[in-house]
Every structure is written in C-alpha cells, then in structure tokens.
Image (cartoon, rainbow, N blue to C red; front, side, top):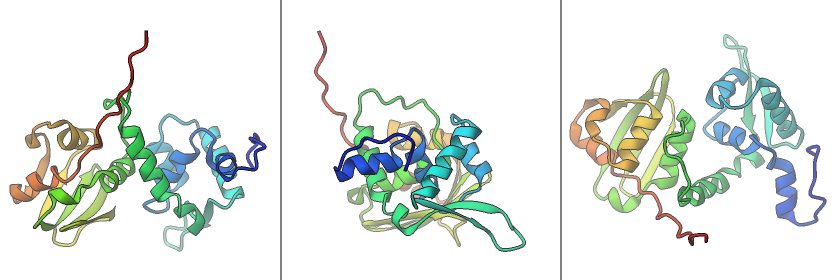
Length: 217
C-alpha cells in the first residue's frame, strides 16, 4: 500500500490508495504502449524528480500494477512494464483524458509526451471521419517512430516504424496537436507521400465539446 490511505471500504477509494498518488497515473500512461527504462520515463515526465519517480515506481511495483524486468542481451537493460492487471487501466485513462479534454481550463500550450499524443489519437479517433479510408502511416517525433493504421471504423497505433506506409509525418507532438485539434495549417508538418493521406489523417480526430461552467459571482 502507499503511505497514505483513505481508510475506506469503497473499491474506488481502494483504487485511489493504489494509483492516486501524484504522478502514478502518468507513469501508467507512459507504459500503456510498452515497457520503458527509468531514463525514458524521466525524459517523458520532465516535471517529476528522480526521487519521486523512483518512489512511484516502487509503490506501483509493490501493489502489482507494474513489474521490473531485465531485457535479453544485447540490450540487457532494466525496464518497467505494466502487469496484465495494470494494463486494464487503459480504458480508464483514455476516458479520463476524454473527460479532461472537456475542461474549459485545459491549457493546450503545455507540452505533450510522444506516448501521450499517441494515446490521445486512440481516445479522440472519430470513426465517422474515416469512411472509405484505408491507409497506413508512420509518425516520427524526433528519434521516436510510431505506426498507425486506419481501416474504416478501426484505428490502431503503436510504437515502431510502419511497413510501406502511405505517408510519413514528421513533427513534434504539440505541432501535430495544433494541426489536428486547433485547425493549424497542414503545411506546418513535414511529410512524405501523398498529401491526400496526410490531409485525411489530421481530420480523423475530434475533441468533445467543452463543458458548460456557470460563471461565478
């Protein structure tokens, strides 16, 4: 258990005992697409100190949400990954992201990690915009490569390069988000391949409407 507890029999309260500490859910978010080294997590969560990150990893490992294992040679590096039970948090995190996107207070200028951007695509893919589209893409964010596939109402994205993609998009997460969500010009992206597929891709994702918040007096 984490150091603090709600001391409440409710299963929701128990869940928050397990994953409710600051940074815990973001660690889970960063592992949803696969394992990472400690240094990778530090790079993708720049706001967390090494000590706090170590504490969260230890706590999540202690309660069986994640596990630590050594990669086979020649890599031979230690990585953190979700357990099967920990991976069941994915729909919860995606739905939490959808709920958070409706906030009128969300600051779209804050940075996005590359995995967070990929998970946003899973969250906000709108099947109604993909009718008749069958295409594969490679997304490049610096040294990071992701493959994405659209086939009508289905959308898949994961780490690693694409095989024979119809288009390659080279950007950073915030610029791509600005094109997809804010209507910035597609010319802000570097891409190779048919422009038609790029223009279709950036229109595949739809944010939910903002929540109506009553004005305070």
